Amino acid sequence: MFLWIEYAAIGDQTNTPESAIKIELNILFFALTGITIIGLIVGFIELKFLSKLFEKKAFLVKISSKFIIYIAFFLLVILLTYPLAASIELDTSILNKKVWDKYFTFFFSITNLSSMVQLSFSLFVSLLYAEISENLGQNVLLNFFTGKYHKPVSETRIFMFADMKSSTSIAESLGHIKYFEFLRSYYFDLSEAILKNYGEVYQYIGDEIVISWTLKKGIRENSCIKCFFNMKSDLFKRKNYYMKEYGFFPDFKAALHFGEVTTGEIGALKKEIFFTGDVLNTTARIQAMCTELGEDLLISESLTRLLNLKSDFHLKPLGIKKMKGKSMNIEVLSVNEIKENEVL
Image 1 (cartoon, rainbow, N blue to C red):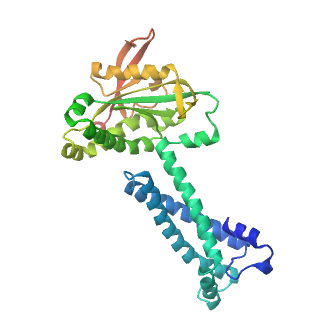
Image 2 (tube, rainbow, N blue to C red):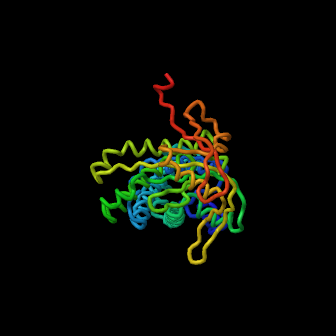
């Protein structure tokens, strides 16, 4: 993009500054290959390091810190790759004096400054979009931009309602400020498992989290079920932290069900993606049965028919249950993970 904008700005080649790299097929191939590799490196750095480093930082601190780090990185990349591009254009060795004369001309040129201004603007917009999108929820901002749910649509989705156990007594013991920090840590530690299993956080309702999947993503490799046990596992790894910091360890119970919902944008002063349909009420009712039945995970029988659970999970039929406040009944099963030593 930078090369094309530069070419469009300077016109014919007689006006080309000495620092400019002319657009040729081999240069274009080099540039496309280079930015693909750099893009993958940046993605790796973001996911493995920077996103975790700044996860709990304020929005402005996160944006500005990442901006400075990436600008320094991109500046280094430009200064390292420019001699390569110059040697390709001049059809000579990278050690040739002409290459380095062009390099130093470029370093102090308006071309370099222009590239950094364009890159800085692109980087800022990208970071802003990514951080706003993260705060709104996965794909929510994209759906607003594309207008996917501007007109209500009907779709089949899987829902998980996960409710923290003994939350009232924990809140009373910790007090509202400490309990808020407890909840924030709790939801933070659940996030990786949700992302890994293609889930989308629909709502946080006090100590309850509602997770949603499109039907295709939810049944892929039993993702909706695996999400529950991955969340449990991730929390357990942090048990010592919770006991030391708060004196309590958060555990939860959950229910899974699927059905048709109407999805669309709703709200005047604050817009959000909203689901309506009987499946949400039914899933909430199933989740309420967990305590009564002494189970951590309940699933509707209709959803089990779409999944392949027999090799990795124990399914225990619990019979047909009457839904509180509803005329319909539903068959539910409990789900438990088969441990490796059980298989052996």
